[in-house]
Length: 168
Image (cartoon, rainbow, N blue to C red):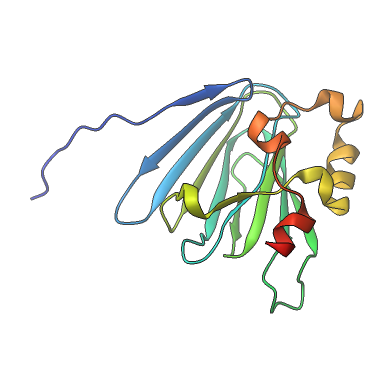
């Protein structure tokens, strides 16, 4: 029989809303993202080897544009961008080696994502969304008043460029 254990989870709050990383079993982690405003952007994030993550994204409430950039150098789709409109109940699996971000289209959008590797600050990379032309086009397509509409973290607005990522 399994012992019952009580845990306290860290809760991170900022202008975008709330982010809660929940450690599950082994390296598996569940991340809960509660986004107060429409046009909240979180991304473009990935973890590099040896701490790369596969992500399983699920929209629990709301609607968003999920954006992916393939950064696997041996892939036929290297540096290609894809996006998906996800609504309540929709899910998406994102393979290792993809930079990932999402833009909420409705306030109070709640996203849960499972990852198969623990968060590692030393292996985390944030790439500036506006340094990736296709990502910038996708975001501008859904932000009618341009970047003034975006709610974005200071960390994401000061991320490295795609060119810096490629030359590191």
